[in-house]
Length: 88
Image 1 (cartoon, helix red, strand yellow):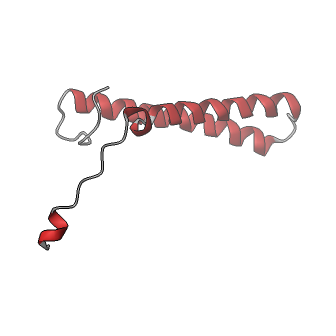
Image 2: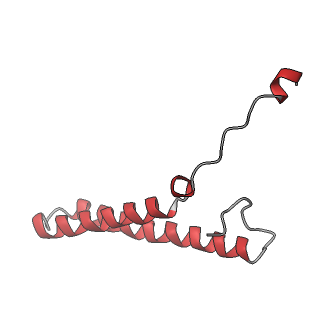
């Protein structure tokens, strides 16, 4: 590493609202369930689309559970928790 590389300024950290994945996961989950309701009302006979939208919503709930679980583990200081998670 040269001397010039070590003097480069580090980029500022992302604002909390851009670094937090929870709104994206919850918003995406809500959109999947909204799509499920639209398919349920408009075209109930399309089973593939109905099950796809329901599965997307359920996987979104599971994804949020993973985020919540990891943050709780990081807050209590578990050695196996991900590092660098915000305590918010």
